Length: 202
Length: 187
Image (cartoon, rainbow over all chains, first blue to last red; front, side, top):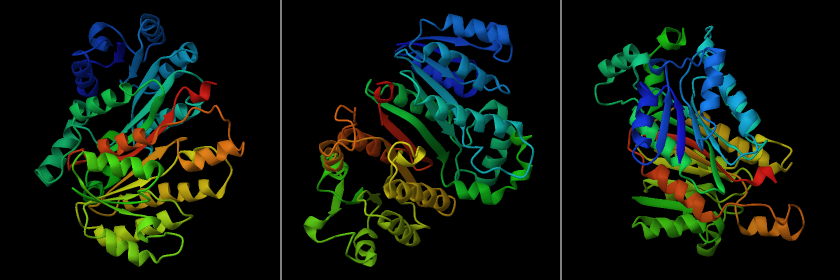
């Protein structure tokens, strides 16, 4: 398969890119190679250059760019036998009493997927993650490691890459349309931290 | 692993049972065929048969019995590193598809799982299939309740999802997988 992915140079995107390039042709779009998903013209360029791909992995997060990218790409792919994989979060499931644009944007991506899934031929897959060990939340992950040592492990980007591969490898007549995955047991994390102090919800 | 499953003699349950046996697991089935009937027997009878296993696959459907059984088994397993896999449904996601109390029961199962998995060590994983080729669906097709040409999943495809969940490492939990036949919606 030919695959396009945003944010392929770091964190989850990098792990997905490295795993899938072993057996697929994959093209990455990131700041490092002059693609900025937050910029309208750059986003159009990404969509234009992804038209010959079979799978698009909507991985990089930047404000509302993931939702915009999903809608714009789906409007072109709706009646095509293609796949859009959205790398999302469970963060919107339990809204903490704090203004968090990240939560709202990820919840919007959930809802956009639910809205689009029944409309057309293009598969829209929503992968909803708990805490993953990535550079953008490195301080938070370090704190988890300090407190729990080896008793509680956050998700690895490589595990997420494996899940993405599982979803795109399904037969044509099957769609794993949503997966929610968390580090386990999650209650230890929620009991140990005040959600108001979670840095990535700022 | 020691696995126990309700409703192991037909449909999805049979496919899961057969697959896990094939993979070498020690699997116990609880069905009407061996005198376990969710519609008439006490839940205590089921809990007693389930509690000494590692994985419970809460498959058989009878009104709210799946939800009640989830709560009862979870009470026993809350502090243990065990796993409950609920066979739910996507049916409650859209009331247009099939307005029926079945939807309400399956939504209750989703919500109960969401509530419990934040409480203890026992993993709770929900598989939420769309239409699956089971005796129930055959009946619906025969009575024209649903389109005869509807694309449907095979029970074996749900069994594959169960295997995928079970093989995750201890520190990872697949909370839920929603799986639908495709390109069903496009027709």
